[in-house]
Image 1 (cartoon, rainbow, N blue to C red):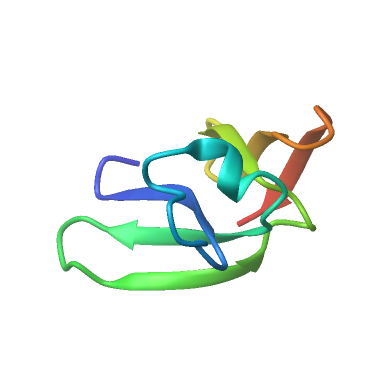
Image 2: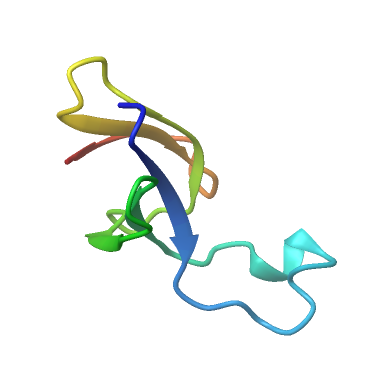
Length: 79
C-alpha cells in the first residue's frame, strides 16, 4: 500500500561492498517492512536463504515475490 514498503536488506556487508557489488554476492537478505507514515522498521524474517532482487508485493498485500540473485529462482514470501 502507499503507507509502507517492503525490501530486502543484506544480513552483513563486507568491506568494499558499497563500491563493488560482487563482494556481497551470495549474502542472505532479511525482508523488512518500512512504515512510511511513522518511520517504523519491522524485520519480517530471513528471505528463505536468498539474496533479494526485483521485489514486488502482490496486489492483495499478502506476499512479496522476488528473484533470488544467487540461484535465479522466483520466491514467494508471506507477509
